[in-house]
Figure (tube, rainbow, N blue to C red):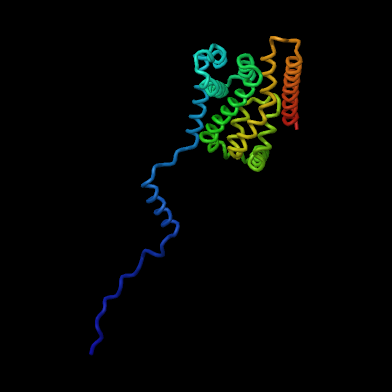
Length: 254
């Protein structure tokens, strides 16, 4: 019997599939159903705007005036302590100097209650600043923490968070909010940051509260000792600034 006639198959002219082209098609198809990723810089811009609003709000109100302007008389006793701590914390977010807030605490509350509520307000303000900095700023600034110096600092705060923050709080002259946001932008965890802050701010807080509480007795031992410690803190801050400026001059000339 004659062999069955068969139609030859058409030659494949497309050639082998390009893996990279296939991958690009898959990625583009997946991206078509997703919203474009937002840049982390919009969150950083929101952080700057919030901090600017907090600082600008001081044109409309003053935490020190509110705390010392009869707040205790207008509020029930059980509300006064948490409200004082909250106003203190918001004051630190608005960049009100902590010595001024501590002085109000000493004048209004005395030594024991003043130190307790000032430390509580400081810790609460640090927690709020840390949350804002970590949530809105770290992602944008993380690529800049890979240099030699900043990378080493970031690694130190990540590995030795409690110790690093404690030293940071005990250093004289370092701005409180700079420490808050510097730690938030690093890899330190929240709980070590909070515990180290609550412990580390006690000495400087107590000094200013005691000085203000005993200001009516300028010859008392409490006032003289606290005033002497404040003078040492000021001198230490000036020496630190001078050494930092000298180090920058040496770095420029080298």
